[in-house]
Amino acid sequence: DRATVVLRTARDATTGRSYIGVEMADVNYSFDPGVDVNFITGEIAGPSAGLMFTLALYDRLTPDDLTAGRTIAGTGTIDCGGRVGPIGGVAQKVAAAEANGADVFLAPALNALDAREAAGDIRVVSVSSFADAIDYLQSAV
Image (cartoon, rainbow, N blue to C red):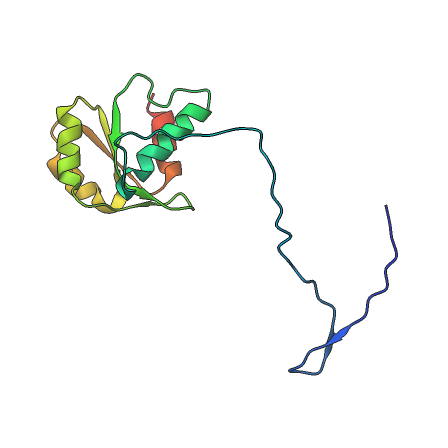
């Protein structure tokens, strides 16, 4: 459909030049997605659980099994852009994962060297992003 509209220019207070602008406003839009979501995280807490929590949620929402029978452990903060950030105590986390039978440990890139130094037989995989973790898990089946 086409419509004809009449526009009036405004005058820029600084330069005195005329312009046509677009004003954006929050219209308080909301919607009901029709789904109730409850997270029961138990003892999972803290920012260093970000990567693994995100992977677990992704694994539940997609049809494929990311673990492919492997025991996957890891750590790292995660931001809204999917970037994985460093954490403290990586050596202890690798040791605990290995002691509990994990096959793979996903480590933030900035902690990967320390994680590898603490590892025995567990495979330490350096990740900088959520996409890196997914790529590794899907390709190493």
